[in-house]
Structure formats: C-alpha cells, structure tokens
Image 1 (spheres, helix red, strand yellow):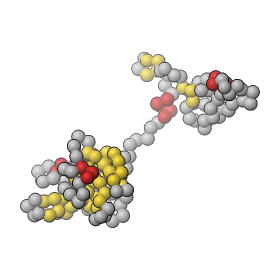
Image 2 (tube, one colour):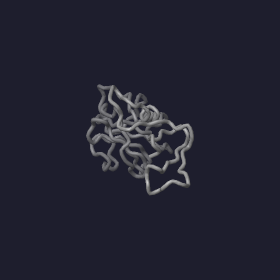
Image 3 (cartoon, one colour):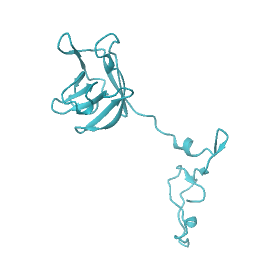
Image 4 (cartoon, helix red, strand yellow):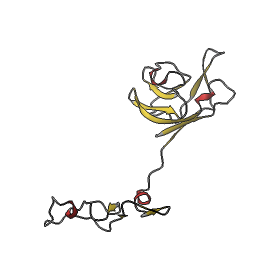
Length: 168
C-alpha cells in the first residue's frame, strides 16, 4: 500500500505514538518501509531476522531489532494487513504485550482521473497554457510527412487518452 494507518492504541497508554499515518518512502530488507507523517524517526519496517514488522519510534530505519511495537509477519507482504497481531512495549512488564485494539490498515492513493487533469482549457478563469483534446481515433504520421519537421509528425495514442492539439 502507499500508506498505512496504525490506530487503536489508547492515548493514555505507553507508546500511543505508534498511532498515525505512515507513508511509503523506501525499501528496507526487501520490503516496503514507511515513515510517519510529522513523526521524526517514526517508521514501520520489516526485520528479516525475526520475520517481523516493526514500529520504531526512536531509531528509524537503522534501528536493528529495537521496536516499540511489532507483529509477526507470517507471510504478510506489508504491515497494513488486518490479520497482523501487534505487540506493544510495556516498560513496567519489561516486555512487549499483545494489544488486540491496535490495527494497521493499508491504503492506496486515489487513482488520478487524467481526463479531468488534462482536458480543461480554463481553470478558475485562467486559460491553460496548452489546449488538450481527447482523440476520436489514433493519429499516425503520413508516409509523405517530413519527419525532421515536428509539426508534421503525429504521435499515436490509444483512443481516450489526451493528446495535445496539433499532433505534437
């Protein structure tokens, strides 16, 4: 997923800072790695040695086996799997304790509707710098065209994609 939301840790409990939205930023140990928005050093990463998804609020991507929370991966390709069971560090118990209220949900960014992005000729009264139109057929370059002259070269696009007027 593009981002993962951790929720369910009660605000009055230790390590409640695990809650929040984590955005995909890189790959660590062959798996997606996420950084919390607004949380310096707060990350979710995979730890291959233990086959765990780790939430580390202190050491970032280089934290090794340090974890404020973890879930046994058991084959989960990402931490946003609702079947994962999260264990949160409890200082008084001096160990990680299972918290069934904590869940991690994977989310995708919404798909871009390119027709809405490229087609409008004016936005809020401002004329767009390039006019775009949806082609009714695929354009091709005629055999007689001078390919050295860009104004005579047409680019082929599948029907429905936006192309600049003038065949550019």
